[in-house]
Length: 342
Image 1: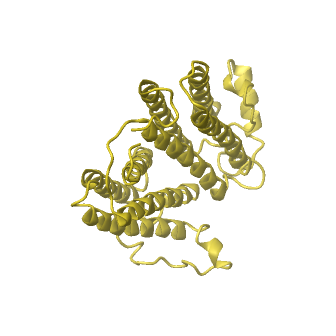
Image 2: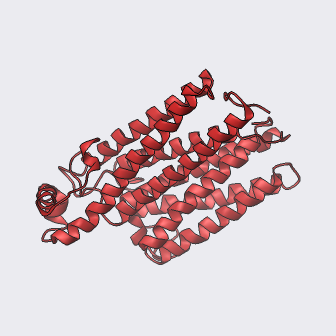
Image 3: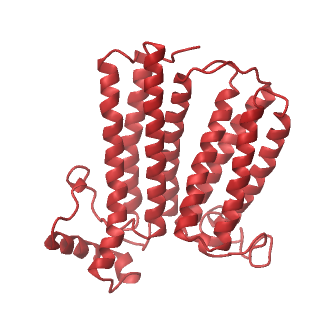
C-alpha cells in the first residue's frame, strides 16, 4: 500500500475523505449549473464581482438596480421583455446560488488544505497536486464568467462552445479530486490484463466525451426537440445533418446534429461497455465491471425517458447527475485496472 504523499495512513484516509466530500460539492455545482441552464437563469447577473458579488440584493432598491442591468442585455429585449421583478428574482436566485456555491467550494478546499499542510500531514508531491487543484478551481470561475460574457452583447444566450468548455473543466476537476482520493485510499492490488486496462481508460475517455456532447445539447436546448425514439422524427439520421458549410461547425451548431451526436455516443458507449463487461467477467475487475455496466444501462434508459418527455427540469437534472455517477464509476474501474495498490 502507499500513502500517496500523506505523512501516515491515517492522514491519507482523512485527506481522501475530504477530497470525496469535495467531489460531492463539485458534482452539486455541476447539477446546479444545469439547473441555471434549464431555467434560463445564467445571464441574470450581468457583472462578475468575485468578492462583493457574494452578497445578494438586500432591499428593493438593490433588486431594482440589478433588474435594470439585466434589461440592458439582448436576452431581456428579445426573450423576456416585460417580465416582472418577481420573475426576475426567480432566475436571479438560481445564478446567484450557482456562483455562491462556487465560492463555498473554494473556501471548503482552501481551508482544509492549509490545515493539512500546516500540520505536516501532506508531503511536497501531494501538496503540489492540491495546490494545482485549487488553481484549477479558480480558473473555473474565470472560465464561467467568460462563458456568461458571451451572452451579454450580441446574442440571447451563452455560446454552446464556452458552455462545453466550462463543463469540461468542472468534470476534469471532479476527476482529478476523485482519482487522488482513490490514490490515498488503501486498496488491494488487482492483477489485470493489458487489454482491460486499455479498455477501462477508453471507457472513461468515452464517457467524458459523451458528457461534453451533452453540454452541446443543453447549450442549444436540443433536448426539447426531436422527442421520439429510436428514430428522430421518423428518421435514423435527421434532415440537415452534416450538410451546412463548413460541415465541421454544423456538427455542433444545429439542434438535430447535437442531439444525434449525443444519441450516437450513447450507442457507442453501450457497445463498448458490453465488450468490457464480457471481457472482464472472469477477471478481478468483474464486480466493478458489473457496476459500471448496470449504471450505464440505467443512464441510457433515463436519457431515453428524458428525450421522450421533452426534458423537464427534474429529468434533465437526474440525467446530469447520473452522468456524473457513471463517470465516477468508470474512474473507479480504471483506477482498479492500474495493477498496483493505490
